[in-house]
Each structure stands twice: as C-alpha cells, then as structure tokens.
Image 1 (cartoon, one colour):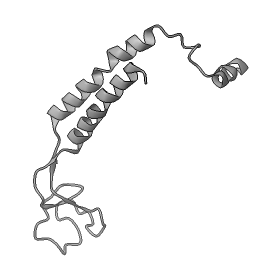
Image 2 (cartoon, rainbow, N blue to C red; image 1 turned 90 degrees about the horizontal axis):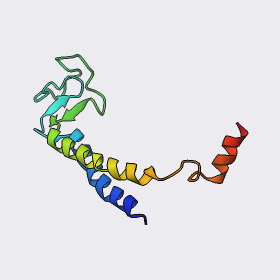
Image 3 (cartoon, rainbow, N blue to C red; image 1 turned 90 degrees about the vertical axis):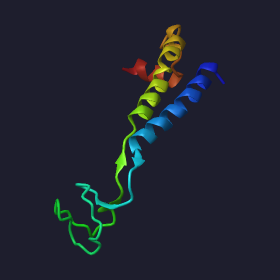
Image 4 (tube, rainbow, N blue to C red; image 1 turned 45 degrees about the vertical axis):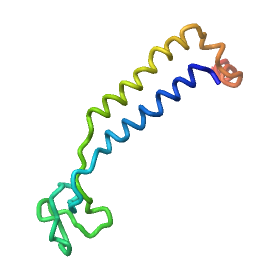
Length: 113
C-alpha cells in the first residue's frame, strides 16, 4: 500500500469519528422531550400533543429522550486532523499529470466528445 494512502487512512479515520461524536453531542439528561421544540414532557405521558408547540406526540419519533449538547472542542480536533491531510494530498498530486492517471475507458470516452 502507498505510504501516503496509509497515512491518510490513519489520520482520516479518527478525524471522522471525532466529528461524528462532536455533532451528536453528549447527553445532558434523560427527560422526555418534544422533538420539535424540546419542551420537557415529564408527567405528560398520555398527552396527545405537545402543550408548547402543538405537535402530535402519537408518533414513534415524536418524543426524544433527553437533551444533547454539541462538543465544539471535539469538532475542532476532528477538523484539524482532516486538515492535516491537505499537504500530503497536494504533495502526492503535484508531480502527476491528470491524463496519465486516467483509465483507458475514460480516455476513450473523452476522445468521443
């Protein structure tokens, strides 16, 4: 395997995982909440709709278990890891000519135009 590709995999995988964790966020509580307005639905188990926004609470995904808070530090770390891939990618592509790295079928398709 190409060392640049191996480096890209080693750096990109944790970066993508950190970004996913940052965007999902950490759970602050486990109280039932309206999915639309995040109103606390504690004690309103049989309510047909949210008292705050009026959304129906009958659906399977109408309620959410708890609030989540996004993690900006993890997002910054993940983006920094992905930005580490830019210099090796530029260096790796610097000496390549685009027409020599294309497959034959693509060159033939371009020649027909």
